[in-house]
Image (cartoon, rainbow, N blue to C red):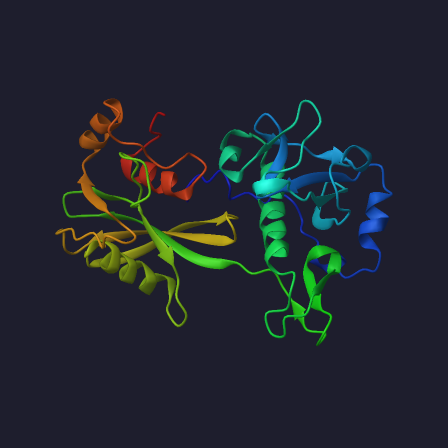
Length: 299
């Protein structure tokens, strides 16, 4: 399997405890409990490592909600969402801490903190979007220690959602890798193709459909490689490798504006002269590229 920096959970999510009345208050009273601050899609960190703070040190900005993340080695972990300030910027933090995004977690070196941070961001993103019931429009309230929102109007329970998306390395008969660039990406930035799974289709069918829609390439021999949570805002990336049955490239102009086949030598040369920028190391895209390449590609 691929080495994925954001794939770790490293803790027990303890789903059986979430419905216990007063769970969050009980945990906040325990000295060993640790709290992760989250705001505007970011987590509070010291360097590249998310900060797991004692509850009395995790009082920043407004708001008092907490979400139960799970347990590890008899320590419970909570997320505390901190409302952002103007223009979506997160609140100020104490000295020594800074807000970082999940993309910055690749070098954290701490699987537990990384897993908690990804979970916290995904959960907080869902709460931000689920303040009202999608059925009747009435306000919803937090329940089950942050894992449910209950509609005040019809008492429906709403649960966090995760949107499946496929991402794939496509390789042809000459062992060349297909990379593409989105229209809004900086010049030279390229990655493997990706897209959301649509209702009524399998993940494998989504791979074939996206390859044809975005690049005009027919693929077969679709092989699952690994998955990665991607909480921006709430995706599960399903990684595949596929074999190209055709090689003529037709970028759709909407999702993809540029396409190119690369040999390993061509990719190395383009990286060396600065004409090619690849996906960041935190992403499964980079892992799929490096699996084809046969090793780590230097930054």
